[in-house]
Image (tube, rainbow, N blue to C red; front, top):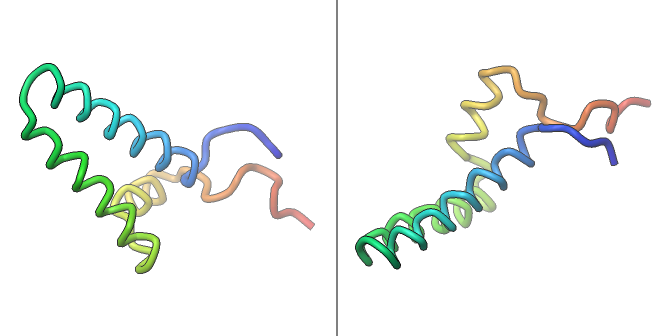
Amino acid sequence: MKEGFYIERIVRIVAGTFVMLSLLLAHFHSPNWLWFTGFVGLNLFQSGFTQFCPLFNILGAMGVPRFPTGCCDK
């Protein structure tokens, strides 16, 4: 598999970062940050069914490649 950053990989990194950050904030600051964790999880869940992810659209508009370079060349 080719290395590099592409939309699917960035979305997973950002979602994981948000979950970990919100859990840390819930532990050290306020349990209300768990609502943000739930929002991220719900967004991931719905995007699995609807194929709609705001970050996916933003990254696409910024020109980030959808697939790793050279993965789909024939």
